[in-house]
Image (tube, rainbow, N blue to C red):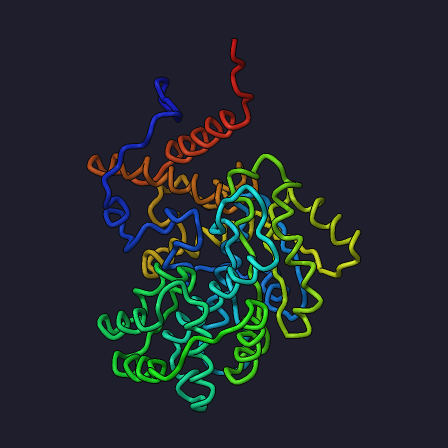
Length: 400
């Protein structure tokens, strides 16, 4: 039971290496933003939504904040680059939260320029991790790819190639260009050098032309000579724009121009996959209905079984499969720990991660005195969540 002087608002003290002290090689609950989690492929939960997210059709994927939109987008991205065998779509992550905050939505032309930059960042990073896809192409394809990269990248192509040569790994590109492209199994340094030499043709100038023409050339090269089946425009981050968080209709206007182009893009094997907060669904679907734009709407739905699976996959990966559940470090009286946690919470992965981590931090803070994870740790974490959830729902104090 909890002690009488328990304060749910107080932080839980624990050393920075608490996860190592309980037998984990990393903290599997710390990354609430999936795009920054390098271990995500080790414990992705297979949701039915993946099939819809990968197919060749415009789709709106809806979930509440913390409901797994970004995790799904990242998992789809990394699935497409798992290897170079078979036919996969090309994932183009477009984070609207990174667009310039001018107080107005980007124009159609600005969207195209931002998409071209995002697409070339993703293409260079993906090819650096899987260089065989480029090296097996014809000289004409390699020159066309270099010309498109030079036209769209935020910096000179040669700068990124020099970085790859110096470091011998594509890992340094991900924080600069596209962090969701932190792929596994990077190439050997000698293969990466061949890749850099192939793209570094001094005679290859940047492709010139209107943004729409260059983006069209990008799409044709990716889905033609480079062998991807189609392009997924993975649009996320619309709820990260602080100006628009209070007004769903205003925020939704950021994607209207994109959907106006959906039919033309589909003819180029390019399909919108919009990851949308649930509060914005009525505004976006209402616009599409009014304009007779076709898009499939689907929802990410979590239940207790999926959340338990997610938490157990994480503890298994972090313990190198020594622990199948938190039961392994719990008192005999505390069983089915993950289910005990999620049963008391909203069915959202972000909340489940936060509360599980709080329980472990509470346990780790008293490791020097021995013992195991117990009921008090679980009660502490759930009370901590309820305290902060109640604070978020309270109206702001009025000013006199």
